[in-house]
Image 1: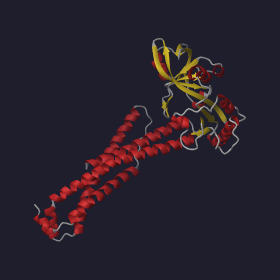
Image 2: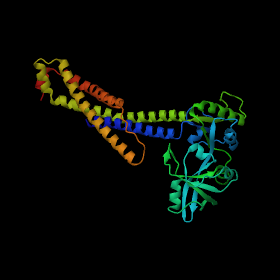
Image 3: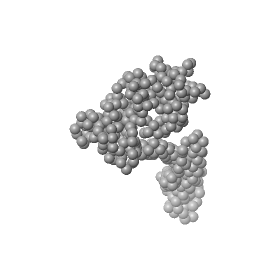
Image 4: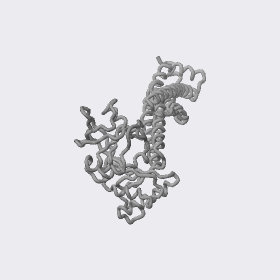
Length: 390
């Protein structure tokens, strides 16, 4: 029974963890807004954009961002923010560490949300003038400055001096991105002094209402094609990719579903091991009860009676193991839920009736499949030979 208990319990736990993690990720993406559009460099018909997999493409420029922010081109746009990201060593006095740098434009707060806890965010003038100013995420501030006031202090990034003009409010990790462990730098300054590039890695835009999303996507595509001198309206020659939050939700749902069911299938392999164990035990059981089988046949038991007796015994073993596995899986899943809640994650405790029903069905099938041959062997024993068995 142990193999069945472990297998069924593992399936229940993995399905529950998968559902909880999926709901957490989807809720975090939804919290960013369903009216967000992303423009990535490089063309991708389906799946993840190439840049999301680490491929560097330089087709997205600062002038593209300016064209998109023009209300004549995209009238439903609230604002847009361009990004160039990197990692660099930062220092203040004797403290030094590697930090994630987010070179971005002034529209960051209006698109991404968040609040400045101390000081201010950099202005559009500072963005255009290559100003050496930065805004710290709350984690970076704590690790670098501790209890000291960071606003007004000078830090070094790649041997360049920067003034800290603001500290962001704590926001946590949302959709695989830690907003607190970043340093925000004006995009022009990031490109020229730190990254040494002239392209953008990403443009994110906020649309005034989700009902206008489809129109805004068409306007963005037309504007980008005009910027890049692309005459084909079909999109086959595009050197950019447009994605929206709804597409991201669908893509992540497909990925997490596939991962969840794959892991559940791997866990279910232990049910096969348990089934083989049950088959072996039933063979031993038959050898120990050979005289009993012979006696039953001698007093009138038919082959079908012996067959059903051993099949029912096998199914009972697997059903009891399955029930214990389900209860154990639910209990462990609930403990994981409590731990996740304690750590501050908005985790849901999700146990589907489908997974419970499937676990019970699989338990019965394992009993039938792996108990059928031993039961058949038992039913085929000759009464005289069985009674003589020692």
